[in-house]
Image (cartoon, rainbow over all chains, first blue to last red; front, top):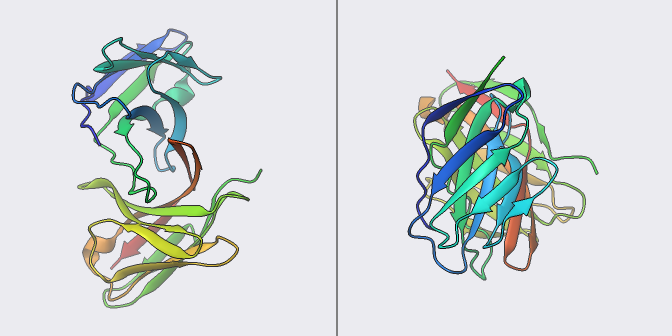
Length: 113
Length: 114
């Protein structure tokens, strides 16, 4: 799986959009970008994934650059409950099944009231 | 659908003992993965089970083992506990659609080894 680089921490004001960047310059053509988050002492939570096109769901939007070397997760109206560690993971599944997600250190997003 | 459940939620053991943790995946999910999370090493993959067979394994010693039952419930066992095994153990129920895989995590079991 391609390596990802994320800023260790970010602040965002409550009610504003939180934009979390991720660099994955060695991504290969078939690798997907996934985002998970982990609120303190809970299990990680799946947020969104994408391959090439921008994606949106009820939680967030994912913007992937045209060259696919970086992406941005957007939480449109951040709330205090969005304070968490956000993980960007790039992954290619093998035919033999899942060999486990590789979690880096992620970005600690702190939403300020 | 109910989410992933893990029992027990908290556990205290002493060095040398063994422990068994349980995970019930989301109904219909046949793949279960286990992870260990520590402050020093972060989240690390232990192993994955699919249809009662271990399909993939991370880089952990043989003291860590697991199994999966016909109803997809899974257990993991750690024998001869060491202080360094103190961690949050997470189970993930996995659904795969083509080349996309989504993992849904349980709340974890927090193990403290004294």
